[in-house]
Length: 313
Image (tube, rainbow, N blue to C red; front, side, top):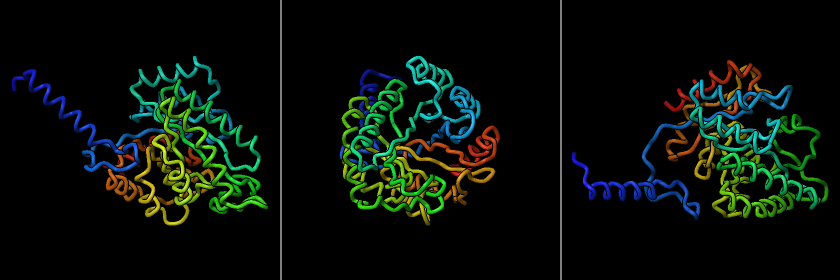
């Protein structure tokens, strides 16, 4: 077919219109009137898959190289795994991802807004804003956000034994914790908007151990600069209806595997069922691997990618 200027203009208008219809989240957080066309699910890998907070930190540069070699589409960088957060180091990560054909999907950070001490909450707010600046420098469009927890249990291992159900501090209530968290995140939203970085609140124990807790915070903030990180391995009880409930709000999904037995626990997840839930919801975003098993990542991560590919085939 001969391409005329009129044909090109009409095609361009069609592409633009299609792009508008394919938006998965409007400014008001509503789904589009028409679902986007199906497309290949993109798989990322978190650098956390190679380092579980113990021993020598696995170099992020090597994770990027491994991801490209294995056939992942992108990388999620764990802040605590970095040994250098200078502009030069961040630029090295950015360049290495580019030349290896990988997206930098998300910057995973830790903060805790659950404290009666305003100074402690301010430290968490300041840390989050600092990490927004780092994400901007990296070019990552999202940050994994935590709510925080009461810390009335001695350790994270103890928290895992009770599936994240932790009592409030004496003299305080769950409502106090939610107010501190909501107010703190609200203080971070202007910085996120200015940098163009979405804060992606994860169902990650503490106040967000339940889907209702996640959505209570999400709806109270009511901003296009707050989304949700759906972690399929952090849901207490029967996970599948909970995944269905959270998927419409998700901007990133964490896909857990446990080769060699889980570091804290092991779940027997029905991965094809999870993939089906995401498909039916027309989830368009990345599915990022967090390999949380004790097997060496050099063998467990390739196995995990094969599980992901089969589940979404």
